[in-house]
Length: 505
View: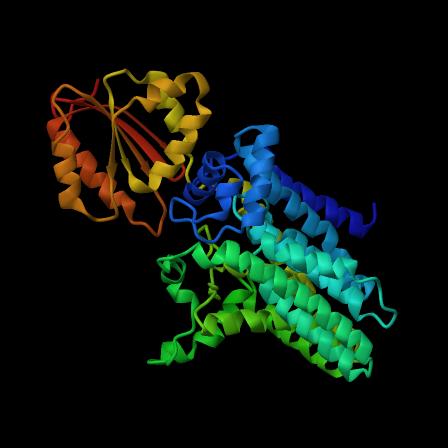
C-alpha cells in the first residue's frame, strides 16, 4: 500500500468512525434536523426556525433528500456531511498535487487527513464539511483554469454556480479565485482568456444574486447572526491593546482552531515561508490560495461574515468552524513552506524542515489518539429521552432547560411506538440562564402528587450546571428524588412531589 493510499484510507476511517458509532444529536444539529424534517423542500428557502440563520439552502435540500431516502435517523442526517468530508479528503491530493512536489503533497495530505476539526465536522449535521468541499472544488477548477494549457471551463462554471448554493462561504472563495484568474490572464497578455474568465465570474455573481434575492435577503431579519459572532469581528476602531492585537491573535489562533495544528507558531512560520516561496516563483498560485481568506477578512471588517479563531480545541463546537473552508489552502501553504526549506543546499535547514514536519505530524497524531473525534459527545440525550419513554407514566410531568428542547423534540420523532405517550407529557421549559426567580416560580407551580422528570442539556460555556443545581434544590424541598442518570453533556432526574424531602426510594 502506497503512502498516498494509506493516508486516504486512514483519513476515511477517522471520518467514518464517528458516523458509524452514531452519537446523539446535540442542540445545533437538532435545530437543523427539525427544520429539515418539519418543512417541505419549498419552505427550506424561507427563514428557518429555532434561531437557525446560517444553513445554506443547497445543503438543506440535500439533507431533505437524504432523510426522504433513508429515514429520519442520525446517520441519514449525517450522510451529506460525511460524503462531503470523504469527497474533500479524496479531492485534496488533486488540488495539492498541482502545485506541490510528491513529498510535499503527502505532507499536506497527512495534515489534512489527521486534523481533528476536519474529521469531526465530517459527521455533524451542519454545513461546515460542505463548506470545505465547495472551497476545494473551486480551487481545483481554478487550478485547471490557471494552467498554461487551458482546460474546458465547464467545471469552473459548475463549481462556482452550485458552490454558492451549497456553502455561504463559497462566495469568498469564488471572489478570490475569480479575481485572480482574470488578473493573471490579463497580465499574461491573454485578453481573450481574461474576458472569458470574467464571464465565468459573472455567472457566479448571477447565481449568488439569485440566491440572495430568493433566500439570503430574508433569512436573517433580526441580525442575530452578527450578534452571535460578535467576537469574530475585528474591533473597529480599536480601543485597547487587546483590540490592536486582534489580527495577531486571529492569525496564530487559526492554525489551532480551525486548522487543528496544535503547534501554532511552527505552523504559522511554515505558512509564511510558503507564501514567500510562491511570491517569488508564481504569484498567481499564491493569490489563488490566500485571496479567499483576504475576502473573508474584508467581510469581517464590514461585519458581514465573522472570522473567529481560538487557541484551543478543548471545547466543542470550536469558534473557528465558520472559517473551516480556509483550512485546505492553509495546509497547502504550510506544506509548501516546509518543502521549500527542505529543498535548500544547507544541511541544517533541511534537517530543520524534517523536524518541523515531524513535530506537526506527531502533534496531529497525538490528538487523533488522545482526543479522537468519535469521543466528542456534546449532548447524549437520546438514552435519557428513551428512559422517560420506557419508565414514564401518563400523569408525569417533564421539566427541561431550553437548551435541551430541540434535541428532545427531535428524539420524540425517533421513539416510534413510545412517542405517543411522551408527546402527551406536559412540558415546562426553563428559559435562558441564571433566571433563578423564574425557575423557582415555575417549579413551585408544579402540582403536589406529581412525578416530575428533569432533563438538562449542558455545555461548558453555558454555565447551566448552576441552574440545574438550583432547580434540583427547589424540587428536593418539595419531594423525593427517585432516580438520576447522567450522560455526556446531559442529565436526568425523577422526583416525586409531596414525598419526604431528601429521601430515596
